[in-house]
Each structure stands twice: as C-alpha cells, then as structure tokens.
Image (tube, rainbow, N blue to C red; front, top):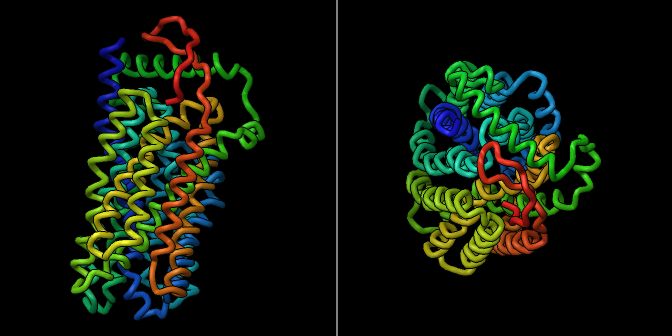
Length: 442
C-alpha cells in the first residue's frame, strides 16, 4: 500500500503539478504585464497613475464577484473542462488588450480579465486537496506557486524585448506584449484539456493499485477530520460565521496587498534608479522574485517536515513587513535590496498558508472556504495598486504605500496568533485507529 501510494504521489508531482505551475506562470504574466507597459500606456493612451492603479485593481473586483460562481460551475463541468476553459479565456482577453484605445476600454478589458480568471487559484487548490494527502500539499502548493515566481522572474527580461518590437507589422511594443503572452495562455489551456483528469478514477496513467492506495489515503484523512467535526454536512452559514475564516481573510488580504503592489508598481519603483531603460528595468525587477524562489521551496519543505506552519507564517509576515518598511526609507538601490527581502517573505506564504486552511476547515466545505477566502482576500489586489496610484499621483512617491504594506503585514502576523490550536484526531499509520491528541494546527 505504501509503495503504491508513494508511486501515485510521485506521478502526480510529475504530471499534474508542473502543468499547474505552467498555467500559473501564464496566469501571472497576463495579469501583471501591464506593470511593464505602464509608461507606454500613459504615452499612447493617456492612462495616468491613478487611472492605471484603478484599472489594475478592477481586475480583482471582477475576480471577487465571479469567484464563487466559477467554482460552482467547476463542480458541474469538472476540473478538466473548467480549468482549461479558464486558461483559454484569460489568454483571449489578455490578447484583446491590443484593441485598447483609452481609459474606458482599459477598464473594461481589465474587468473582463478578472471575470475570465475567476476561480482558477481555488480550483487548483481544491483539486490538490482531492488528489494529494495533506503531508504532500505544502510541497505541491510550492511547486505550483513557483509558476508565479517564474512568471515574475521572466516577465521583466521578456517584456523588454517585446516592447522593443514597437512598430513591427504596425503594432506598438505594448500591443505585442499583450498579444504574445495572451496567445501563450490559449495554447497551454488547450494542452491542459488533454492532460488533466477530473477524478482519480479517470486517471489512466495511474495503475489500479495506485488509484486504490490514493483513494484509501484520502478517505482515511477525511474520516479523521469528520471524527473531529462530525458527520453532518455544515451549512454555508456555518462557514461564513466561523471566526477563523475572518482571520484567514485578513492574513491573506495583507499578503495579496504586498504581492500585487509589488507586481504592478515594482517596475515604477525600479525606474527611480538613474540610467535605467525598458531592458534594465525588466532585468532588475526580476531580482526580488528570483530571491523568493529559493525561500518558497525552503519554507514549504520546512512546513511539511515540522508541522510548525503557523510559526513559519508569522515569521514570513514579519520579514515582509521589515522589507517593505525599509524599502520606503532608503535609496533606490538599497530599496531594491529591501524589496528582495520583502518578496522572500510574502511570496513564500502561500504553500504555508493554504495547508493551514485545508486542515482547519471541514472537508465538505473546504472548497467553499478556499474560494471565499481567496475571493475576499484578492480585494487586496484592488486596494494596494489603486492606493499606490493615488499616493503616487498626489505625492510623486510610493513611500507611504510601502509603509502601508508593512503595517498590514504586522496586523496579519497578529491575526496568526489568534488562530487557536484544537484537539485533532491523528493516526500514525495508514489503517491505524484514529486517536485524539492535542496537536498544533498545521
């Protein structure tokens, strides 16, 4: 049983997780490439700092509104069809940015991009909860989430050459940027349709013994959670009124603020370094994300091995806070170094945070809870970019925005202390009898 389970998990890590990482890479490229096109959009379309910040944030309004409906439709159509559809849809909308003519069309297309992407992240997370034991989800989340870091790392070096295509075949450089990166997502979405399976029993690439071992392990883990939470299916209201959900939202809201403030405004901050151009801004902007890659894998592995995910989460939030604050009070070159430190904090949070959520919530409502937390927290992706735009337009600097990110991370770290440990049934081996022990929330 153990060898069949290990074999099944290894196959999932080889076949499914890398695909999700590639999809995540395309996802982040298409939602964040406006950061490199900002100055060109201002010059060609008259989109100023506040309008740019609002457009960047409108994406998250749509994402939030359509998140839960998207996940309900995924249950109806299956992960294979729905995840592929999401990827193709956001690629088409992103490519359609070549038709933007001013602020109104910019706002509309950013809103539609949020509609197209809605449900992607919680769908992937929910998929992993149905395919992998809890002891492997941290590393799976890290390998999948690294797609975002690869996107942030490549987006700078990739954006510079694409922007330099200005005038080729009559298109501006920023139009080539959106067209090529959007088309990549369409291709990956079509590929995903032929690669993914909605259920373990549909996976012909798993042997029958591997399927049985995997299903047996997942069933055992669900039984352990039911022993703690009871057999009765919780209502939607019970999820909404659970105080832990509010804490999780605050924590992830602060994380999303840091991620997307840096995603959309990092190139602008780097441009404060004298002598930079499109190419050098792209290369320098990739440094924080490169630093975060090593930290992300290290923290995910540490969380899986030690189970001390809450303590790790607090440390990462405080690292993010320190880096953001120091970036606001130092010279441009030193600020870039501080943002590298901040990124090592906030970009390593996801593979630590979601296993905590997945272990804390009743298995029959975990999909709803993930979608709800992710949807509400993603509003941080509206607040931070828009807030940075207003601050820069009125002060000429993003300094106070960085201070705000630092404060939000400190508040989130405090919320982590309020997540109470609970008696949790544990089993030392597959097939052993569950017993109750006081264990830390992982």
